[in-house]
Amino acid sequence: MSITNSQDSSITRRGSCLCEAIKFEVAGPPSVSLICYCKHCRKASSSVGHYMSVWNQNNFKLIEGDNSLKKFRSYDTESGNPKDRFFCSTCGSTIYAITTSFASDAYYVRTALLDGPLTKELYPTLEYYTEQKPEFFKLV
Ligand SMILES: [Zn+2]
Ligand SMILES: [Zn+2]
Image 1 (cartoon, rainbow, N blue to C red):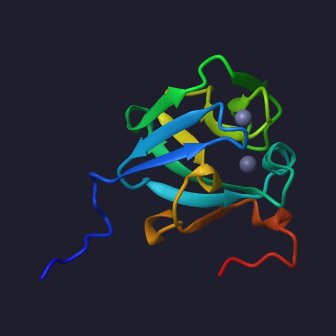
Image 2 (image 1 turned 30 degrees about the vertical axis):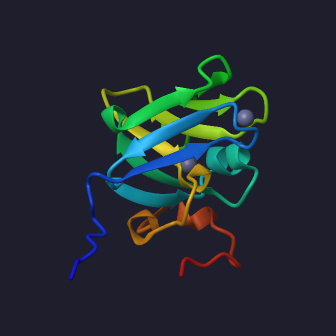
């Protein structure tokens, strides 16, 4: 009998933007998954908030689309920490964001871009800026 280990650190997930010009891989489970409802995440996602999972820089690999990946730096974030958001210049999907104000190798990868099922390790367990969360939107 084999037991499936849902925390399998050898698992590699693939993801892409809408037009598939950008393809990437993330290795192992993320350190955390969360939803952020801040103004910038709402605007950048064109949605109620950004659903993201955090991987260490070393566990993120860009496979295709280096030329399509563009960066937008925002300074007036609600946390006060400038952020670089990397997006596809063809279709506009946001791929990941990094904080620029302090040394961090955390990549805030847009979880919904991952192919395959959203398994339990990817379920959000944190919410940021919930005071800006729409009333109709509930984390289940
Ligand atoms: Zn694209
Ligand atoms: Zn945010």
